Length: 163
Image (spheres, rainbow, N blue to C red):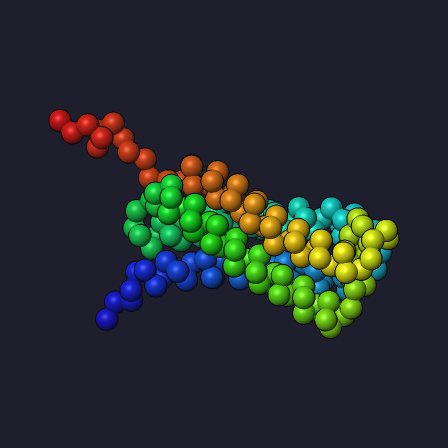
């Protein structure tokens, strides 16, 4: 019995979104345990660069998996929807990870946030979560748009105007 292809296409965002989150979790746990200075360039600059490169790569791999699943290039709309869905899964699960990390380890990990010294901690936490969630979605939309533009199925002149 063959699996439902629609069900498999819904697994792609879950799989690749969770892979991004696992990469982010690994980065955070490793860097926070090895690098004690919260103002280190690895914490302030390295994390965002790593997170964005990882998100871009996983959206690309997710779109290639969609192409493999369909046995044809996805349309621009399909690629865009899949990429945004991957980003949504990542944004939601990464936010849950950071909520659990704050609940377990406390707020010491937020010391590298730019407003940590000036603002009340609840504002720092709120800003970090809003930034993580919405910026992940915004960058995911941008990355999905760019990747879908280059990977999407194109109508050639021959198929648009049959002889």
